[in-house]
Amino acid sequence: IPHNGDRKKAQGNKIEATESGLKVTSTKKKAKKRCKNTELRSHQTQEEILLVDEVDVFFGSEFLGQTHNQVTQLREPEVGEILREVWASYKRGGRRQRLADVKAMSAYGQLVQKFRRYAFLLDNEISLMLDQVRHVDDEPYFLDTSSDRIGYKVMDTISYEATYGYRTIFAYLNEADKGNLRSRDTTLANVLIMPVSCGQFSYANISPARILGVSGTLGVMGTFEKDIMSNYGVSTYLYVPSVYGESNFQFDKAGEGIHIESSTSDFFLKITDEIKKATSQKRAVIIFFRDNMHMNEYTSSAFYRKLGRQKKLLTESMSATDKEFVINKAATAGQITICSAVFGRGTDFFCKDERVQKSGGVHIIQTFLSEEFCEEIQIQGRTARQGKKGSYQMVLLESDLEEYFGLPRGEKTNIAKQDHY
Image (tube, rainbow, N blue to C red; front, side, top):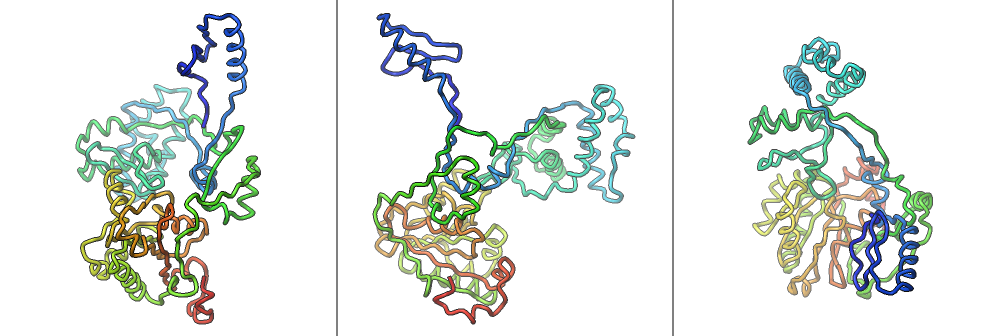
């Protein structure tokens, strides 16, 4: 976290530090000199510290694989005209539009007249438009109809600050064609711009003086990950036992904790049966699917409708208020919460319902095998929190194991149940 070097008045003394220097209002000259020297040394040795909430996040696309991209916005009526034509040509279909086609437009000629020295830059941006118009739906987006803003999934929420360049601009034109924008002309006038790149910098190269972090998955971090951490000067690890004492987490790895089903119908049936078994005991159940697609396959099935009324979906597209409501309700007696794996990290499904605790706590069902062990540990950590009781099990589909891990069909019959995990 960078220290900005600009402090307000320090409490308990008369010292005031600013970017431009020090102002000391002590009435004693000796105290004034001593305080000034101390503050000056402190000001000169300030360092940047990076605080990492979850160490395994360090390796994700949001840090190691992400860059901050500075852009400037070119707002000219000719830019809007070109964007509209590129979008209209894409919608018409037929021959793919080329840069030469855009150059033949009067709007292009007028734009070049305004920026004669930068025709090469304009051509580069228009080439990006022609490419990205075909990928407008590659990144699923969400439209907030109350504010005419398009957002994208970032971690477990929807960010309306995130953009994907011309893909986002064409997404606005797409929604305008569908009649989904409340203030169509005003919104389009605001978004039809040319975002010109001014450079990039990598988050991973911020080079802080010290990195401090915590993680519940430190014990499963591999050698490769530790090697990367060492490249950033992270070489000291401290394992701290829970302040809540021995864990009450239950996972029957050699028995009923793992089920592998051969067909989709058997897979859905088993999930439904395990949910009903837990809720009949007045327990709360949270089910994690690999992603929204797999979750929707289950919630669209007849098995989902057998779960009764006391069930909620938790999705990334929900508002912050709705998410908070579902999360707070998730650990109450008889409640069923269905969500994707993104909520398996950091979401606090804290249980305050004594009925749930007396019955064994919150029960977690994971319906896929994680490619990264740390993800599995994170999902397991959504129960038995802060000394509470809780249990966990896996219900897996055999074809998923074949698709994602190359496990041949029928291989489970060659492995003893106690060795499945």
